[in-house]
Length: 387
Picture: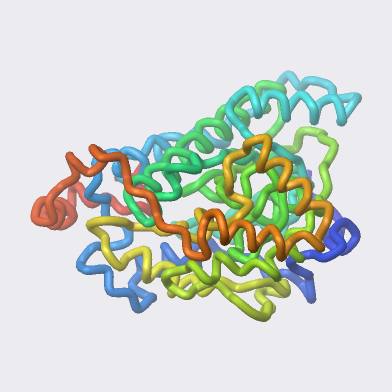
């Protein structure tokens, strides 16, 4: 069975002031064009201080979350289980969709939505260059895990990097388990998560109604702002789809610009949108961003300062839910809300310190350089399960 989804829905039919618009045919992306992979091939001019992009980090807990020790690598081989020959009948797609969402939440999803699997958002290849074929799948179940607010306030640090990796680990377990469950119902399913990506998560999440595209270039949710990590399950299970939502992110991002002001790399567009692969949107300078990630590899190897300072990233408390409701419904409030956020949190909020004992057992620089020069230990991030 081939995947025939029809034309991509017009975002303007759902969102009054969208943060992106489709101007022409959307060119499919390649995993091998991602900045991490390009850097690994030596195609990006970045001074890595002798630390390669695939080198394991010096912090022991961080190595648990990323190659070569990461649990996710062991899930890659089982992420597309064989469907059971017995197939459950689905006379009511809405009922099945509600059941799948309930199951996903039980497995740990903070947010879940369903969309048609638009082939424009399927990668042409994986990180090793192998072609990706998703033509047998009709839908994408998109799940989101929220990151801890206090942990990401330490960015850039090992503490926030561990938090990101922890959510990636959880996404891997969640999506793989959900894929196995759908296979037990007799339908095809493939888990897609960090390191084993089959799709572009953000546009699918937008069409699944989880949030809107932001100035940062990632999805902004009403509940958690941009401090979420995404995963997906591709399937041919008959499902009822969700639709894009409108909570005035376009208007808010145009007036706010706090992410651009606070980006230490100056990588976030502060002004006009540009067309990228047929889509008009704010374009992040990924080279400048990644260059900052690798600026001080003994103390950090990532940065999500933009996520940490975003006014939408606040804890999901009753007060902040109330503010989110005002912002969502009354664009006239945006400048006032931005002013109050600057007043209480600062125009350039200070990063929080890591927990006092967090770096007690980190390697010394000498030990770290010895480790990454050990060819047996320095397993490449691209395919750790092959080593």
